[in-house]
Length: 169
Image (cartoon, rainbow, N blue to C red; front, top):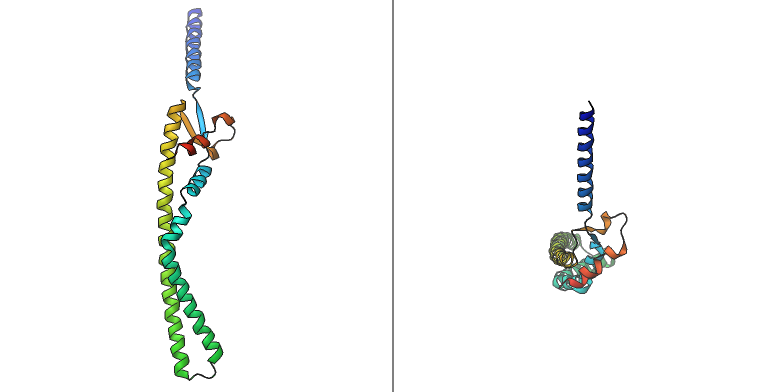
């Protein structure tokens, strides 16, 4: 029985020493990056919003033109409605319906295209940020880099956000 206890004790000592070795191995260098801040700063740096506005400015102007035409017809209807013949009123109402339909169709297409292009530009920035995170982590010897939103507490010295932003080309 004593030998069994000795064997169990020896096994426990070996097991606990291997656990300490694993715990020491687990003490890796961990950093974090505020990806939201990085995305915001890089979007400003690369003038993404201005680029997209410029890209879609022609289509936005076309929508404003349709709005202007609709407004003009509505004002004409209010101003001269009582003096118009029923046929003239019907014609203006049909024109308004056609303009409204055209406006809604173009507005929906514009919205979808803006959303798609916005996502494309966002993906480009995400790719650049990931590349920069990998570069900074390897350069500074970090084993793990987390998003700052997932971190409850961390030392400010492990914040790699500014380094990552600077590393994006």
